[in-house]
Image 1 (tube, rainbow, N blue to C red):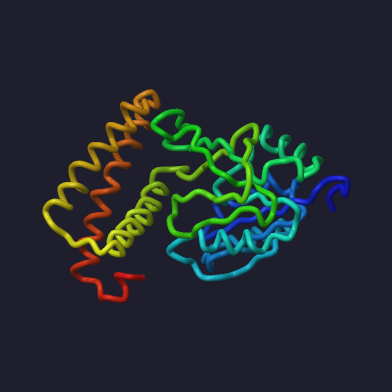
Image 2 (cartoon, rainbow, N blue to C red):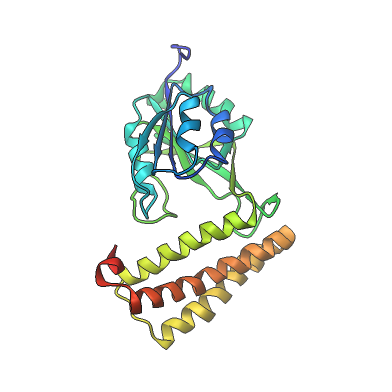
Length: 269
């Protein structure tokens, strides 16, 4: 039980097969939390068991294509004064932790409704500092009930009903602890892009193919590697820029396959 002289905090997660990451993330927040909530999309590993060991309330559901639906479910389950929404591959550094402790001792009426965090992304053995990957701001800490997710895209930002501020420190994002994990997630994201193309009632043609095979990959690579100075991140910066461009090629191939071979219902799902 936390000190009653301060405001209470819910820390919420949405998970799917995060046994390799979850404990490290929970270690960085468990002493701050008055309530831990994990909405799990029917993981087949030990994710739910790990969460329960930390005293979390675990809600089992389905693993949805738009994962933010489960994130919103976790946010809706929060019952404390403030909510911190975390991903299982994220860790709070000490500066963030201390700032949150400070805010919990303040009168919330005098504070912003939500707070941005600067995020460091780990890729090929290092935290990227350029290439559009830093500071990679995200809203994760807010007065309960004052923020929500649109639930339309995996890359969308949280919406806040009121003013926003900034937390000190960084959110450490271990989203790609090794390259195989990066490729697995890229497979998911390219499938989502392909489905979004279908929902826009696009049809395969040579002009669209040229856009996704040539224009968007080249534009993305040059933007990230040169304009946003990804070259300063060395080999990791080059690979990140190259594979960010390749996203569009893979998405178009999946879109073409879905359009030509998927049934009508699966195209719109």
